Each structure stands twice: as structure tokens, then as C-alpha cells.
Length: 147
Image 1 (cartoon, rainbow, N blue to C red):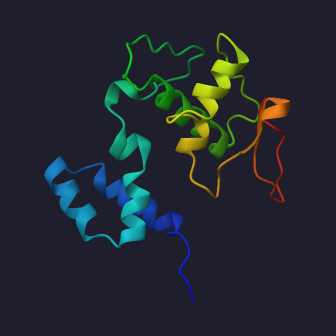
Image 2 (cartoon, one colour):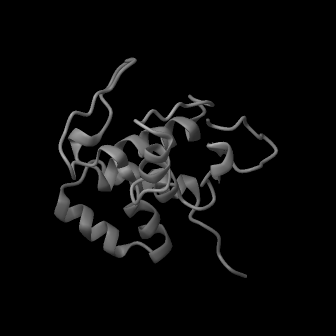
Image 3 (cartoon, one colour):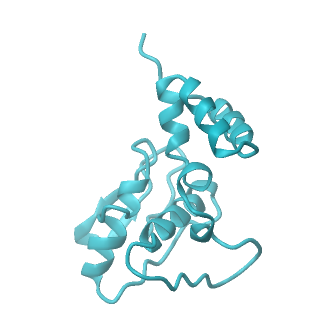
């Protein structure tokens, strides 16, 4: 029987452990993990990928401005934030604002750091380009589309 993805509790336990380690210790722990668990943890944006300045500020805020140059990771930061909001249930409808619809599609949705690229397959939204929207995958708890 094929194994499924790592259990959420195992990933959470590893995240908790890694958060308190320095880079060298973290690398040793990651190297000792089974391949599937290591791959999952290595894709963890706030823990192993993002730089501190790419993470959202703490607190209850309405606007988060990332004013930075090319290559900073603004698109990835935004895509990861949107994904976290939707997956946690804190947001059901999110507006993606760009100069044009094509910019939103090409960069924020389909781009190399866009929402489709950063979301693992089981949670990856369905993209309906003709309707200009992303929808959560059909589940018993189907939610409205993100437009």
C-alpha cells in the first residue's frame, strides 16, 4: 500500500522543533527525516524558506506594504499570505489587485511565485481563467470562489 502525505501532527511537531534550532542543527534534523516529510517541511514558507522581512507583520492590521525592488520576493510573500489566509479559514474571498487583469493572471496567479506555484497539489485552487477566478477544490465543505 502506498503511503500518503505526512500527517499534519508530524509536520507540526517538526516545525515546532526546528523553530528553536540554529541553521546547523536544523540542517542535521532535516537530513535525518524521511524524504516525504523532509520535502514537506522544506517547503514550509515561514519556517524554512522566507527571510524575516518577507513575513507579514504581527498584530491586527489592515494594510501591509511591501515596498521593495525586483527579486525581493514580494509576489511569493503575497501568494503565501493569501494561501495561509484561505487555508486557515480567516478569508473566503480575496481581491488580487494589479494594474491589469493580465498582470494579476501572469504574475500573481500563474507566475513562478504565484498562488498556483506555491500551493501544494492537494490544496491548489482550481483556476478558471475565462471567469477570472480561483476556486477552492470541491470538498464537502465547498467554499465560494476567490475572485
